[in-house]
Image (tube, rainbow, N blue to C red):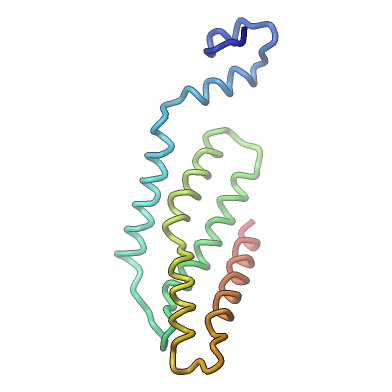
Length: 149
């Protein structure tokens, strides 16, 4: 019969210390990761809503574009911190930061809304402005994430 609890695993001859550690991680408080994700998301929402002014240049929302690119940079930093061999707490912190803060800080919805706004703007005759904007922002996000890693 397989062991069910960490206490049982410690006395099993086939279990390793990694099994004990993995079992103890799974037995951690179930809502703690969700609470951290929500807290990071709330912080990102407060920062973007309160401290980031809306800057428009013609039909282009410059502030949303900068948030999306800087969010990719922050995601690159978190990914590189998570990629280093470290304690499980750092991995958990990076995962909750990426899911909560980066998930709220960056917005693909705003990206495509901006692309549609550019496509319908008077200065865009060939309707390729939106696609060009999406490709340019994706390229800038990749470059920012790579620079941070």
